[in-house]
Length: 81
Image 1 (cartoon, rainbow, N blue to C red):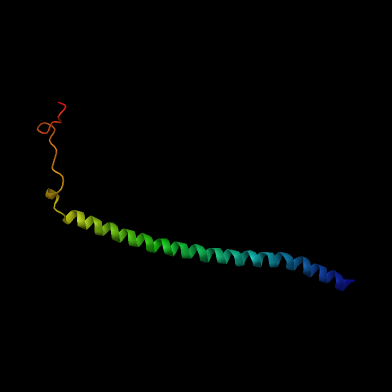
Image 2: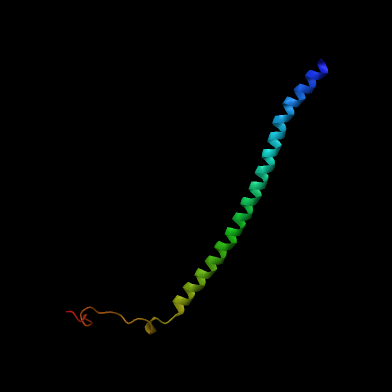
């Protein structure tokens, strides 16, 4: 009878431990997936920052006089006035 009680006690202790081990394994996998996602997003943000810097440099170096002419409302009146 004592052996049966010991086996029941061991079984009752091992079930929660196995449940915790499964949860820890699941959480480890989830953390790894999130880490990969953050790494991917960091690389994407770095690339986007580089592209924005390139666009700002192009805008600063471009000659704006070749673009749209300035509008003077007193000399350039619309035809309906």
